[in-house]
Image (cartoon, rainbow, N blue to C red; front, side, top):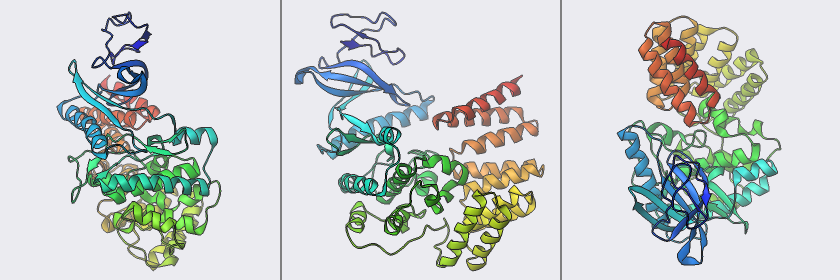
Length: 466
């Protein structure tokens, strides 16, 4: 069988010998007279993936990745091309590793790029989670020991993966893990920085330095490993918490678990999820040593701006989070205030106290708390966003727009900030600016898998255009 390779077609298979697709008229080809596409395995932002046969190797199965990007505009297309080529380069650089797909070929045929790689038979960890339920501590620790061994090799080759998540880890049929999708990976220099405004990785799994500055280090991949462990333990995708709390979710990840973990394991995960990359483990080898040695001393997550030296401040903060989640907003305010009294530089305590004040209608007080959080951490995108919402409640539209703009400057992929700024522009009768922001938010929502929010933005655009 040979399937159609037209990226705009649904790729029906045909018996060998048929020359044209009856649905689209596309010529049916065997790439390089060697790699025969059999069926489509799905597609994404870069193009489509196909199951194929290697005719020169007794029809051994392999995978073809076809570059057919959905990106629009020269800059976006150039970035997509760079990332596709990058995957081939990194797979070639990493050579033949038993737990990384082997690159078989990379070529241009009929003005289209193709990458051919080894087929990994098994299921990814997201599929395993959906089928078998949440992982227990022992299963996650076993996963860590296997995955960190792969990462150790990857980092030794000066490569940063930058998109570690359950979807990109396959459990092979023999039980071993395989790390896939090196399309977002980057060669490590002193500092790895993407083009301004470019965010690489998946929301919720991406650390602060990668999200805001495009920087990536071995410790950046380790944060993503920690977020992956949390997802498997809790069944909750980290991006769901990130959308509501920003990086504040790393303070309270334990409360989302269905079963408790040991204090030692909790400490390991705390250190993987440190917001400041300097406070995390700095290498896969360091994590492996910690997992295989005596329990490490307890570490608590830190705010983006300060290492909290007072354990009581963190304890009050955690109690405040619990009360807030149980809608005891006044009790939460009391606990956050206690944390701030102990540590006046506790940005997240100010931020969450602002959220609690907002819930009970103390809008002006909430603004003061958000402002204090911003003073401590000027890059606190979520604080700008929430303060913008508060200004909107007070009908100070111009101040709201300024804050949404600051949030977008901090995080160019902040879909909610674009959406709210668009609505606020419409309130001020700036229709064109409103439509541009809503279009941007719709695109970002769609990229992030938030189809309902994307449809809401599109609905608003249609209303504004009338």
